[in-house]
Image (cartoon, rainbow, N blue to C red):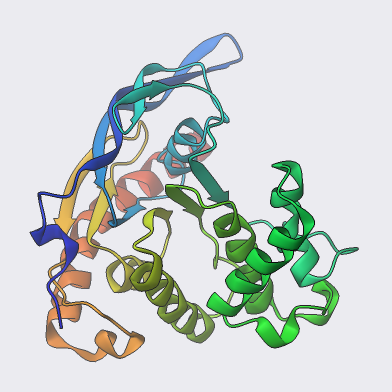
Length: 276
């Protein structure tokens, strides 16, 4: 087994978020969603972002992915400042995103069609990535014939087929049960091992964050700030069996300690607002 990627500081920085703040106008009032958020993601790292509801996780995701462009600070990919959607970033969302009228392989081919990839190469690449996520035998099934976990894997394959440098995943398994999430975590770990895929994952699950990540970024309650970055010093390769280890339990408890404080603040603020 090899140590976590956190022990390889020589890996170059692929993604840098520098001093990002975001305000939204609500009924004539400026509401801070994010304040001075900075983080770095190195080549091949998996970093999870976790925090209470409403802390700005998805806002940060949308800024990095180029879906929000009106913000303070900067986002850089391999040193180049970017704004708006970027071909080096692939995104996987929580919401169902497969096209029901296209088979699994046709779904994976779709972004390649948009990119103008020739038909033969499209099909070969789609087959490659369906095999990577364990769906080779279901290539010609339609989404309605697939389970929730299979559809989540098809969405990941579709995004990876475009060969992004950075994979952003916003609660991709959020609608699935805990057992399925753990097993899909094994698949994500396998993909990471085979592709050395740089990944930023947003999740509400501490177990998922610790299972998959090299670092877990804990965000504060609104406005969202980075409260702490927890290094996950578990060896790789990992599987879902790691959840049985004492060190895994200690890391989950460490993340929960910080998250509980922020979630409690959020609940208290919501109760005050309701009584308001």
